[in-house]
Length: 213
Image 1 (cartoon, helix red, strand yellow):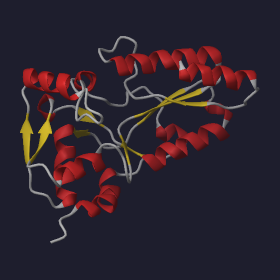
Image 2 (image 1 turned 30 degrees about the vertical axis):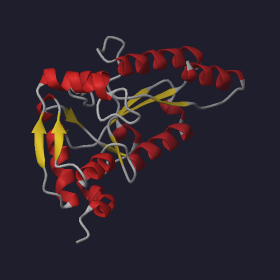
Image 3 (image 1 turned 90 degrees about the vertical axis):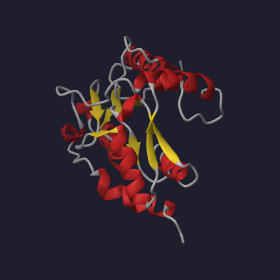
């Protein structure tokens, strides 16, 4: 509702360019409510503002992000890091700077109007390999513990009521599938942007999580 309200207001006020930030994997048929509502939001935005540019970023990384920084922080106090779905789910993390550049480019060039772009990095990682990278760049030696599906479901049902839950039932549904840029999709490259390499940037902001003694 918020997305379509903004789109209608922009249309009414004669705004020239509108960029709508969605999420990779947005699909009305997805099992995840999050991904379903992202797809519905896209549809409503385009109905209200047909020339809107839709950007679907993958897992976004950068200083202060809600994934790498969060798990790095957890690794400083917990004895292990948890793997859901065996840590097999695949991602293409995208640098926040590249997403920002994609937004700027889309606002400046009319050729992007009415089109959808899937934003992902050039490298593919499993959830487990991302946890391994976090431990490597924070200098932490922790176990990676795989949680069985039935136990993960119970944990998610309980933890989702926490203020800042580790996992929710909806997120668990997302982790059952890979979140990757579609082969036929328009990407960062179509916007003239070369994706930054995760491992070239990650150490620069995870260094603060290294042991001090």
